[in-house]
Image 1 (tube, rainbow over the protein chains, first blue to last red):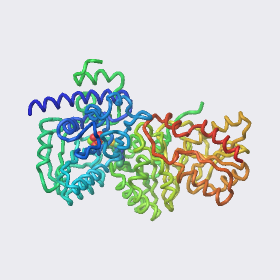
Image 2: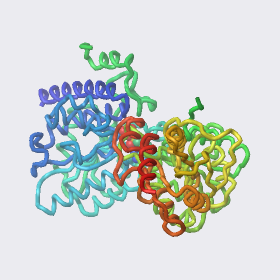
Image 3: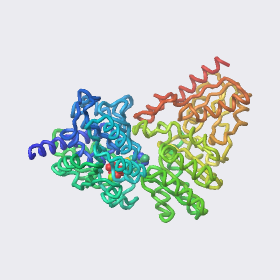
Image 4: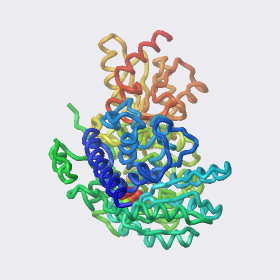
Length: 275
Length: 312
Ligand SMILES: Cc1ncc(C[n+]2csc(CCOP(=O)(O)OP(=O)(O)O)c2C)c(N)n1
Ligand SMILES: [Mg+2]
């Protein structure tokens, strides 16, 4: 277990480096929310989920929905690292003609299941996937990663209601609770707390963890799988911009990319001195 | 060289001015106040600004309630979310009762750029135009935006204003008078007419200049109000120039091009060509690249103008 945790922590560090480099190359995109989500994304793609990068449409795969689609760089670096497409593609993020669109696009990117980017729509699609897989008597699981600001969308709670009503226990939602959205702190813009209590009231089983503690992420994902009779949500407390000290906890870095001057400093924060 | 200003910046400035003039004005935003520029108003009048969080449908419904008790709500977010996420709230709670709600959406069209097709609204004008009671305004530059926002504040009833993300050249003089429902002839001409809206009007002016060098006299009619449409100025242009090219940073389905086609078909059929996004979704890229990619440049208008003249 310890070895696995160390391995995944190192993987997450490498993926943070890839996020920073990718967003420096694109000079457009969302840094803070990609860095806060990457530990959970790493745990899913490099341990928890069954999937096959050489056969993205493999029927036996678990499904991942990045509801907070603006964190696409976090998913893209994981997909590239897993082998869905060449790492060089990352340097084409958000460019005209690239399959790596600003927000996840299932039409072009291998490994992306649905189109997201309009907040609040992802969990509904995840519920639909979970229902469909259950109808087919498959044991595949569906993972949905949401932002905490995203929880302000009413559709999220319509989906939450439906998931509990239909007892979809093959669904696990994860909330990247970094406390920030674009206009500032979630509690000041439009308070969504207490998040876990709300999900519980909607009939969900809830787990609360530190979203940067790899061992805790793995334990929660395993536990979620054992909880039957309804959906589970993992509310993960995170730090927006995690890993790059001068990006951390700053709403201003939501949609800002590392400048030429910031790149070496950001990489240094991530223990990367090659540049 | 003309000055450059984003229409959303002109909006933020004017909204903050209006806030001081009319205490009934309230502003609602959905976690994008920095981008839509309602933040300028929020700073000056924090008690009359409501950040509704990432919840556009609730925001539009709340605005309808504020209007029902006599406030004049301005509601802002990106065009894709104002029109998309809150469409039925706009229809039922705003347009149907003729509520005095002003929906001012920014980031319209493909010049949203790198965010990609999920964020580029190419159908918002069509959708809003189809709603009864709705007035639809697409300003061409900062000057017109300022004048239009003032006209919208003075007008009683639902309005949709579509603004852009990037800086655009100023084409109207400072003393330009905007009237809801009236088109404007910007360039006189006799051989064909460009009927345009939004940022395509500046492209049409450039295209007319180019065509002039080739001995073609192209008229440019700017349509600031797509609905109600100034039918008179369009029919007059059709009669006098005998050929119409429409241009918009929007799908050719349902927007200005369709509106003009409807008028021409019924009142004065002449050769017509619609320039716009050809029934496709947007894609990631730089704004300038995308305008070229989708064929929304002065060069495209020149070419289309030549083609149409050959059909005349
Ligand atoms: C329906 C919708 N409204 C608005 C936006 C614009 N937007 C993009 S990201 C964002 C803030 C998201 O905050 P949060 O969910 O907390 O994400 P994170 O902090 O993880 O980046 C907003 C408002 C959007 N993408 N979709
Ligand atoms: Mg957040």
